[in-house]
Image 1: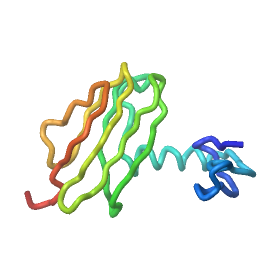
Image 2: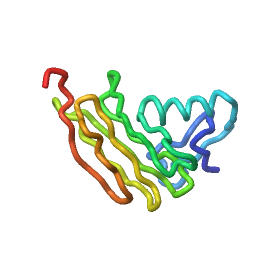
Image 3: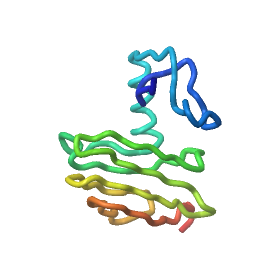
Length: 131
Protein backbone atom coordinates (compact mmCIF):
# COMPACT_ATOMS: atom_id res chain seq x y z
CA UNK A 1 0.00 0.00 0.00
CA UNK A 2 1.06 3.59 -0.53
CA UNK A 3 1.71 5.62 2.60
CA UNK A 4 0.28 8.97 3.57
CA UNK A 5 2.71 11.93 3.69
CA UNK A 6 2.10 12.48 7.40
CA UNK A 7 2.61 8.85 8.48
CA UNK A 8 5.87 7.27 9.50
CA UNK A 9 6.73 3.89 7.96
CA UNK A 10 9.08 1.22 9.12
CA UNK A 11 10.30 0.98 5.55
CA UNK A 12 9.64 2.46 2.08
CA UNK A 13 10.32 0.83 -1.29
CA UNK A 14 12.95 2.81 -3.21
CA UNK A 15 12.87 3.74 -6.95
CA UNK A 16 15.04 0.73 -7.83
CA UNK A 17 11.87 -1.37 -7.70
CA UNK A 18 9.69 -0.03 -10.55
CA UNK A 19 6.54 -1.97 -9.59
CA UNK A 20 6.45 -1.26 -5.85
CA UNK A 21 8.16 2.16 -5.63
CA UNK A 22 6.63 4.32 -2.91
CA UNK A 23 4.98 1.48 -1.02
CA UNK A 24 5.50 1.26 2.68
CA UNK A 25 4.60 -1.00 5.55
CA UNK A 26 4.02 -0.84 9.25
CA UNK A 27 2.89 2.78 9.19
CA UNK A 28 1.94 4.59 12.33
CA UNK A 29 0.39 7.96 12.97
CA UNK A 30 1.07 9.75 16.20
CA UNK A 31 1.28 13.29 17.41
CA UNK A 32 4.94 13.10 16.48
CA UNK A 33 4.11 12.56 12.79
CA UNK A 34 1.91 15.66 12.68
CA UNK A 35 4.55 17.79 14.37
CA UNK A 36 7.20 16.47 12.01
CA UNK A 37 5.05 17.35 8.98
CA UNK A 38 4.46 20.89 10.30
CA UNK A 39 8.17 21.31 11.08
CA UNK A 40 9.07 20.49 7.49
CA UNK A 41 6.39 22.71 5.92
CA UNK A 42 6.51 25.70 8.28
CA UNK A 43 10.08 25.77 9.57
CA UNK A 44 12.30 24.18 6.93
CA UNK A 45 10.38 25.23 3.81
CA UNK A 46 9.11 28.43 5.46
CA UNK A 47 5.45 28.51 4.35
CA UNK A 48 2.55 29.37 6.66
CA UNK A 49 -1.12 30.20 6.16
CA UNK A 50 -1.87 33.93 6.36
CA UNK A 51 -5.68 33.70 6.11
CA UNK A 52 -8.33 31.21 7.19
CA UNK A 53 -8.60 28.21 4.90
CA UNK A 54 -5.06 28.84 3.59
CA UNK A 55 -6.49 31.29 1.00
CA UNK A 56 -3.36 33.37 1.50
CA UNK A 57 0.11 32.29 2.55
CA UNK A 58 3.44 33.74 3.58
CA UNK A 59 6.58 32.08 2.26
CA UNK A 60 9.83 32.96 4.02
CA UNK A 61 12.57 30.51 2.95
CA UNK A 62 14.90 29.67 5.82
CA UNK A 63 18.08 28.05 4.50
CA UNK A 64 19.54 27.50 8.03
CA UNK A 65 22.43 25.49 6.63
CA UNK A 66 20.43 23.59 4.01
CA UNK A 67 21.29 23.83 0.33
CA UNK A 68 17.74 23.15 -0.89
CA UNK A 69 14.19 22.35 0.20
CA UNK A 70 11.17 21.11 -1.72
CA UNK A 71 7.69 20.20 -0.52
CA UNK A 72 4.03 20.15 -1.41
CA UNK A 73 1.72 21.73 1.15
CA UNK A 74 -1.86 20.45 1.04
CA UNK A 75 -4.43 23.27 0.95
CA UNK A 76 -8.22 23.30 0.42
CA UNK A 77 -7.60 24.79 -3.07
CA UNK A 78 -5.16 22.03 -4.04
CA UNK A 79 -1.48 21.30 -3.63
CA UNK A 80 0.89 24.23 -3.15
CA UNK A 81 4.27 23.17 -4.53
CA UNK A 82 7.29 25.16 -3.34
CA UNK A 83 11.01 24.66 -3.70
CA UNK A 84 14.23 26.62 -3.30
CA UNK A 85 17.93 25.96 -3.62
CA UNK A 86 21.10 27.94 -3.03
CA UNK A 87 23.21 28.51 -6.15
CA UNK A 88 26.41 30.35 -5.24
CA UNK A 89 25.12 33.61 -3.72
CA UNK A 90 21.53 33.33 -4.96
CA UNK A 91 18.46 31.64 -3.61
CA UNK A 92 16.53 30.26 -6.60
CA UNK A 93 12.88 29.48 -6.04
CA UNK A 94 9.91 27.89 -7.81
CA UNK A 95 6.28 27.91 -6.80
CA UNK A 96 3.15 26.35 -8.27
CA UNK A 97 0.18 28.09 -6.69
CA UNK A 98 -3.28 26.53 -7.20
CA UNK A 99 -6.24 28.67 -8.38
CA UNK A 100 -7.84 30.67 -5.58
CA UNK A 101 -4.62 31.02 -3.59
CA UNK A 102 -2.16 33.89 -3.37
CA UNK A 103 0.82 34.57 -1.22
CA UNK A 104 3.86 36.67 -0.56
CA UNK A 105 7.48 35.62 -0.83
CA UNK A 106 9.50 37.33 1.88
CA UNK A 107 13.24 37.28 2.25
CA UNK A 108 15.45 39.53 4.43
CA UNK A 109 16.99 41.31 1.41
CA UNK A 110 13.73 41.50 -0.55
CA UNK A 111 11.62 44.64 -0.24
CA UNK A 112 8.78 44.76 -0.95
CA UNK A 113 7.68 41.11 -0.80
CA UNK A 114 6.91 39.41 -4.13
CA UNK A 115 3.27 38.58 -4.81
CA UNK A 116 2.68 34.98 -5.84
CA UNK A 117 -0.74 34.66 -7.46
CA UNK A 118 -2.18 31.48 -8.98
CA UNK A 119 0.16 29.83 -11.49
CA UNK A 120 3.84 29.02 -11.85
CA UNK A 121 6.54 31.32 -10.52
CA UNK A 122 10.33 31.09 -10.70
CA UNK A 123 13.07 33.53 -9.86
CA UNK A 124 16.10 34.25 -7.75
CA UNK A 125 17.11 36.46 -4.85
CA UNK A 126 20.64 37.46 -3.84
CA UNK A 127 21.36 35.50 -0.70
CA UNK A 128 24.64 37.05 0.46
CA UNK A 129 24.52 39.09 3.62
CA UNK A 130 26.69 42.01 2.54
CA UNK A 131 24.60 43.33 -0.37
